[in-house]
Length: 304
Image 1 (tube, rainbow, N blue to C red):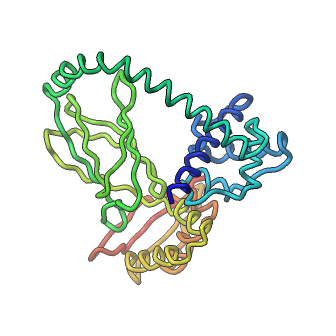
Image 2: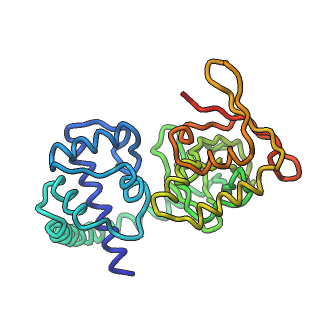
Image 3: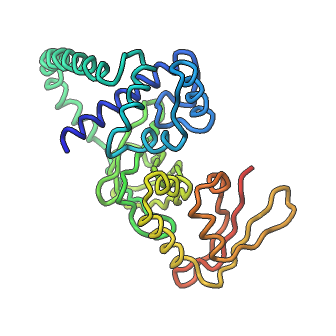
């Protein structure tokens, strides 16, 4: 298990070099490869084909780049990415990486020794300045459909500080975060692999607890299940929707250009939410009504 974890870290460092190589001659919505989507992925696929005469599928990209894989890709794909990044093959990359990491570690130790005295001198002053008039706040993230804590995957939280660099946090095993601020409000972005990203603004008072509801990103979730051939969890999601939606629920889609609506049966809508199509990617829930903890009315549209 330890060796596999080290290999995954090596693979993630290779992906950073892949992104750096791509951005030498291209632009993307983010310098972080795992945040690429749509046209970014297509441009990257085309650049691979031009430079190393081969490529990877969009499904592979979502499985191994946008998600943290449990095991390494095939050796031919590793060799392909290493070649794209300027190495002879995967083994050559690993040897170079070990050499660089060793040098970096030695350099970091020296810097740590030189900086430690200054840090210790500033620590007491910093703690005092930070704690003075500082409030501690607690937020927990809840699945908007299931009304349950989002605890199976960590949520990335980016706190947007005025006139300061953002602060990056991750939720704990209960799906919660604790943050400190001197302000009476907080603004942050919540990013989850299988929930739709959201920007949250809260006016808060000291030690007040907030529940943040995030909507499930069914497209990302279904794509993950399909990509990993995870029939069990796919069926579990269908069962959850079966319980969540009332038998006689009124479900309809608002058609574009105000040409009318299209009614869906419960089964048709569950099929739509559990098949990773382009329309599911662009599906937006507009309104839901609950009765006895079940959805009895739902309105949605497909963003054009």
